[in-house]
Image (cartoon, rainbow, N blue to C red; front, side, top):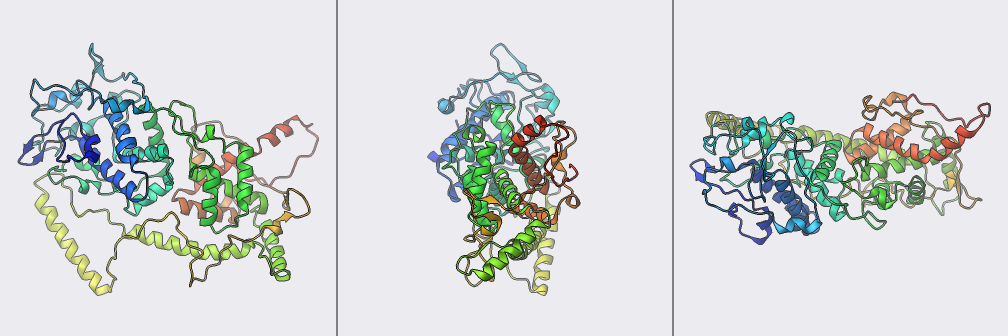
Length: 550
């Protein structure tokens, strides 16, 4: 095996069975080798964020080797691109499957449909997708050997379970590694760190060695012009886990960061809500069964298992508890707030939680943070210091344009008196800091819930007896896309504010939060719905506030 000049023990797991030739235009390299360097940098960035060191040399290493083997690109006797290796000696021995792939007891599955296989079971690409021997690193179409074929690959030329390597797929690799380690980084945190450029993703090609020339069709592979989407990365992670035939992941127990009890406490602190809500979220999680480690543990072999959004599920639990205690119908919560205000005036020893006061405090901070985020989106630099070129002929022209643009930007900055960029801020698990000194914000963490609970009863029960459902009917079809729809005018403003607040914290769309709340409501009221079906038709039913379905 030959590496890209990295002989250290930490980079040994990224070696492939490809060798390279040094030409005038740099190394002769393959697309998968470019992704290897990007995965290295992403793993190192996660280590810098406090993730366990084995994420790079053990977990992500085995996942990547398994992917190369499953796609027949490396760690097999006869790689799929062997015919286009112009620099390999004809008598060189092929690399066998690495023994480290058995670390997770991963079984080998057959891949067919769209590929041809010989007597040895070796897969081969369709002939029109394989570049000829003349299309090497000196090709004018791409800097890599297989860049053109990688772009031209179509789904009808692939097996049904083939997973094509892309830049979003690198984040799927990272998320699976984090999930295996049960690290204290959720998927929303991972995507936020990508936006803050703590993890290489946008313009990740600049982390490649100088000898790897990226131009032509490689630009379409490695350049990203959009931020990753939560549901997209989650779907790719589940697809990747099934493709790699990974075993069941380590169980998510009560002590794990991804357990609902831990994540709910984290987001209660983030949203500046009382700590006493924690016991209510735990009760709802226990009643619905979503705190069961069998339900929380990811098993790639289970094809029908629903996608587990650990962070979204936690904030949905909080919203459901708030609806149970305060109704969030634009009426009940404000009456309870007036009652809490009178209690605070008569008894100043222990502060009672006032939702109206909380709303005024949090809304002000939320609007400022949202405006700041929109400004960051507007100033986001998509272009890198190392520009990409579609061809060598346009290189000089683009360099002149870049120099002119930088000069104009520098002049306008001087005229506008803009402050120089001080660099990116350090990573943090929290967006808001409510207990900072010299601030006008109020911390509601230690406030009591006496105003919304019957104190004479044990265990205490909510004063509010009304509850309205997000939807009145369960949708069983898969083509209506109701989970992607959320109409603000159909719901109370207080509920909409809760959805907006937690959607901002997780950087997801409003419909993602709203849909998850509906799923938990369905589980929570399942027993009550079954009891209502057994009652006579003439018997009056509990009055719920009806809201049109999505």
